[in-house]
Amino acid sequence: MLSLASCRHEDRAPAPSASASAAGKDFTVHARERHFQEELARATARWQTKPSLGDCAPALKEKADLELCQAAASTLAAIIAEPTATPERELILLAPGALALARLSQRMRYLSLAELAQRHVAGDAGVAPVPSASSAARTLAALSQLHKGQRSGHPEQPALELDDGPISQLMQRSIRLERDVIRDFGAYLEYGPLPLRRATFDTVKRLRAEHPQWPALDHLLREAAVLESDADLKADLRQLSASGAPPRARPAQSAETK
Image (cartoon, rainbow, N blue to C red):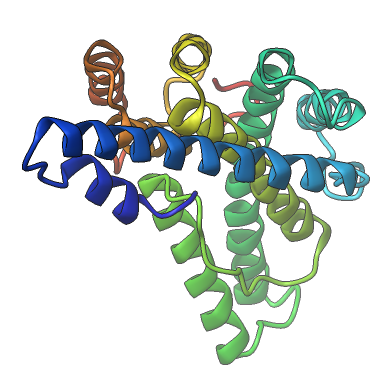
């Protein structure tokens, strides 16, 4: 997301006169529009690169897991097929993509932890060699950072120092693509014209109802509430954000979880 500091400074700058106040308000509107156009251009360029989840089969063996990945790939393909869609049309495309990618990335986080645990069990039993101390430490640190990022919902998570296995690779791709879609929602929710911000809020509200434990979406709602200048929408954003799961709540671990 773009820096919040400059926008907050614009919103809070004191105005000594009515004319200065009008000028300040006009500047804020222009800043919002500039950010919006920049984000639209970035999103168009991103989807035109045709990012992909790749082949799910090497990483996923359970039928339910494969279905999660196939659903995410299908919704992603729909987004990529219309890289220059209007914001109103893209909201229709982004909603199922965001939901499918959130479910997949959540599942992949769990599978990554399960794989790591299995390696240590196998190593202790003498079935396979135990990873080196430095390798194990890097893996544990990366997974710790991953789960901290998941609980906080911060979209800018650090690069993961996991192994190059299929589960790790698919997890990283799914997290990156979920982040891309959430950032697109952020452009509409934070910088779009008020009718579009309201329409995006309604879409986000429906998504939260379907997938309550969604830290990245909660983080977006908090950011949008800070930037929002419309009193009614600001109140709605704050209320929806406050109704989310506690920041440190752990997500459910089954493939079918919402």
